[in-house]
Image 1 (cartoon, helix red, strand yellow):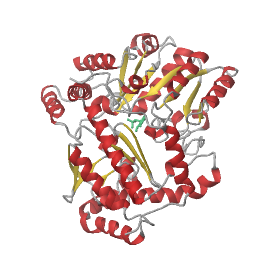
Image 2 (image 1 turned 90 degrees about the vertical axis):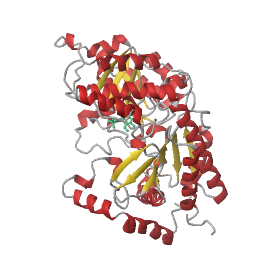
Image 3 (image 1 turned 90 degrees about the horizontal axis):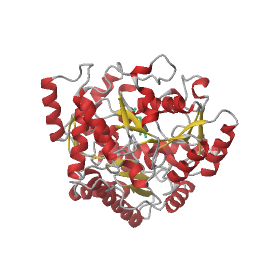
Image 4 (image 1 turned 60 degrees about the horizontal axis):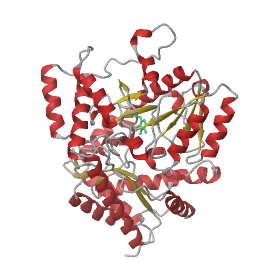
Length: 486
Ligand SMILES: Cc1ncc(COP(=O)(O)O)c(C=O)c1O
């Protein structure tokens, strides 16, 4: 049985060193793959992925952009996946890939993990996926979550991480009677109206808020990652304007730690929230259970008022999301007090269905039993160290770092551009983004699936052999970057 106090992160990365290296990367012109090699990588898709191409071409007629999921917008065209198991995926043309997307994070046990699947199948045979009435597994899951994360005294299950964040903001405003919400620039908290603000790139405010009225994010503010001084100034200013309901953070840093926080940042935010009477919301949609059964809050030793969960909460099965936290805040979700103005309204026809709750409950127990977060974290360490050695050996300016099983490989640096250098952002966003897409395509052509060419999630299924095979494949791409001899 795993130690619930064990975490995926063996050592918190030296954030100053990472930012220094990223700055050096950003100061240099992009170093893409050599044109002749890139043609070869693109040739793979033409020659080996005809069935994927036909399906996704046809899908363009019926689905905007051709795919339903943002992470599947792959260059040069999306691959259609037929089979997933453990550390691997197979596309409809029969090609096998090492899977470091892992569905965007939920499958710490690896894809399609049999012991959970078998229980889901048994449930489907007895009661089907949904009844609309109470099911014992709602209780079991909520109770189990509270055992792992004691700050979660009560839990309300919803349909997605996006919904969990919406609910958390609503509860915070109901409880405090205040309106302002501060997020960290660049963080992703789903796609609800108030959170499409400072999205991906710090300082960009409403840049991505197409179709969202100004009033919907009128009370959202952002501050730069790691800037506690700016956070304090915002909180002070807000005190004169009715106060701050909540500060919401991704506890490892925006975009799942792409812009990592310093080790003591979360404690600093906690202290400021206490000083100004704001609630602290941890968005643990990615980190919840991936970093350890106690989540990022366990790792950092910081107790949030509210925690948003998603992804791992159902072990990769549908309807993954919810919010939990202090009893006196959570009680505002109770159905019984409707109409008095005390109730924060949430709902969802399929929310907390038996399938999601049972899958989540058994996935969490299996993760604890197998020590999956820690093993996945060690795989992340091995992958990161291997990538660092390759980068060093080839004399590349690229930067690899990890927070346990969340691994970052910055080659173009696009994820680190921000509004502190607006002209650079304007000039370099597109070419650096395209380079990242090319890197993702090249890794894919070499049989490795990543998240948008710069992030990887490892899992229990990533044995040393899997990681070492992946490193060989990464090396065959990185050795064909412009300026590398050979
Ligand atoms: C930190 C974080 N919060 C919230 C969300 C939104 O979750 P969902 O996609 O389930 O709506 C995501 C999704 O990737 C996320 O990474």
